[in-house]
Structure formats: C-alpha cells, structure tokens
Image (cartoon, rainbow, N blue to C red; front, side, top):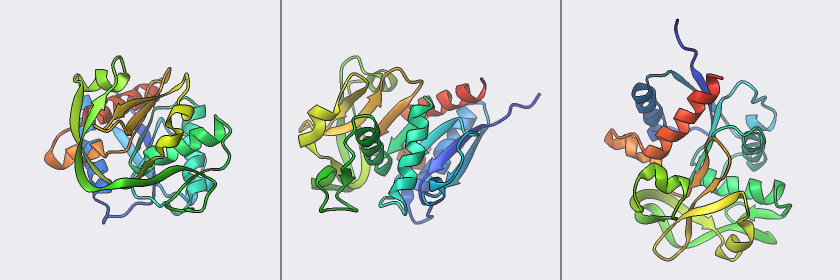
Length: 235
C-alpha cells in the first residue's frame, strides 16, 4: 500500500530569487529519498496565513525571506505549530519570528517586535546585528546536553548565513525560561539557535542549514525535523 505523504507547511513569501527557497526544495527532496517516505511541501504565503486553516499539516517550516508580507500571518502559523505541539523549524527570518511569537504569546511581551519592520518599537526583541552576516559563514558552538548538539554529533560546526538581524542580547537572559533554551552561540556568545523542550522537534536557527542541499548534502537538523514530521503524519 502506498504511503500517504507527510504534509509540510512552508511559511513564507516564495521567490525564486531567494537562494534559501531553492535550497529548501532540494532539502526536502533529499530527505524524502533518505528517509524513504513521501513529503508534500505546501507553500503558504504570509498574507494567506492570516486566514488559513492548518489542521491538515504535520509540520511547519518558517522560512527565510523577511520582511514578510504579513508578520501577523507568520506569527499565527508559528503559534498554531507551537500550541499544537507540531514539529517546527524556523530558519533565519523564521528563527527571528518564532522568538517574537514566543515573547508575545507565552511571555506576555505584547510589544515585542522586529527592528527591520518597526525600528521605533518600544521592545525591539530582534535588532540589527553589529556585524552583518549577509552571505557569510560562521562558527556555531552548541550547548552541552542540548538536542542540537546531539543531532550534530559534535560540539561546534561552521554554518552559512544571510541575515542582518538577530536576537537583541539585552533580552536573551529574560526571554529564556524552563521551556525555551538557547543552545547555539557564535564565538562572542551571541545566540544562533534555540529549542523548545518536550516537543518532538521545535528549533530555530539564525543560520540557514538548508543551504547544505546546494552541495548535495542533507543537513542533520533538517533530516531530524522532517523525520519528526513524517512520524507525526503516520499517527
């Protein structure tokens, strides 16, 4: 009997000019082959996310390409994934907006915002990086006993970026709690990834692991995320 595909929501405003979007398609193809299981990706632009029903999806990937056409739409999709305990991955802009979603709807920081779209905001959780990471590479150091370190099987790695904004360090200590843990950092101690504990998979990375697919490689984080999505779809 043919397996039904796991349905994966790709949250973001798709563009062929965005390298990461092309890499995401390749990553999904590599994962489907490696895991020997069909995966059906469905792109949902952020404006559509303001009204979309998400019940049919088994995993959510909030993708690079911000500023999104609708921050509210992106946050609504992220909130659904978190509250439904669905597998979730946020890369680059997805990382940034997943932190805003958590700050607003879990911690009650209703003014949490993004400097890229509201630089006069009173609580700029996401601010401009001191040094741009546009089309850059950098070392990422993983926390002891973290899920991300376990998945990599090593203490640090070099990853590719394309961003100018990240977590405002002055909020890092107060945002972290019993559920949200910062688990990857650059050499200066700036946050590069987070995870939520007690989820089948819930991670955000400021870097873009999908770019490994441009060299024909399936990134371990993406493999683990899509494995969790497939498992949820099989329930």
